[in-house]
Image (cartoon, rainbow, N blue to C red; front, side):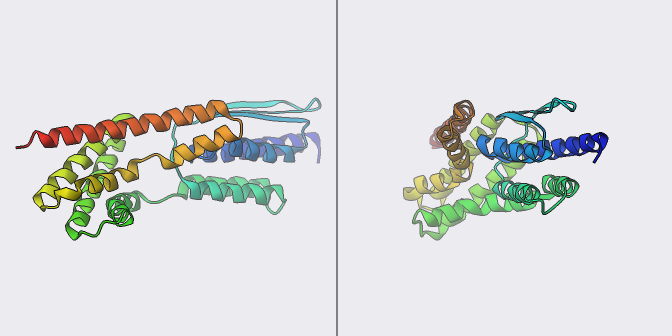
Length: 261
């Protein structure tokens, strides 16, 4: 392989590492996992130095060698979600690439496919939001049929509210606040109408569980345990803000409900 072909291969490998890191970071992967994946892919180039610095919102990568050109890029990652299935698929592609079971071009094609097609369809996400409160209600020991119906109604509210506010690009804080407020108000109103208001608290808790940032909290703890204190602290703060929005929303929903005679 001549020098030109080697540089072209290095650029393609650089693109594959950046794409893998971007998918992982936007899917809620831990910072150490993103840096480790990028590093393993870049080391396949045979270049002398391969460095990456990742924060919850950006990726900085450098691939350099005294005998070749230096490649450096900074990628801003603003869209984030929790998609562990996508994380697992990217890890699989990275492992097969590092084991030389696929070519770099094949890895790039697979990563592009994962980026475009992985994850649940919007209708499936909405359906899951509808039924999740009822499942949580059963998990917490609820057995009343009417309360289960109330959970389905609050789940439908969550699905509609989340979908509409995402289209309107509402800030995450107010998105969760309004969703929690509506869920708490509807849960209280329906349980009173169905004469099961004695278990309204259980219905409210079940209704807001889909909003709780459990994965974000777990990821923040894992980042801190691996020494990534900056990203761990940032993600913990994000989880705290989401939890605060949910708490304020529930309080607002209950306050409005108590104004009803």
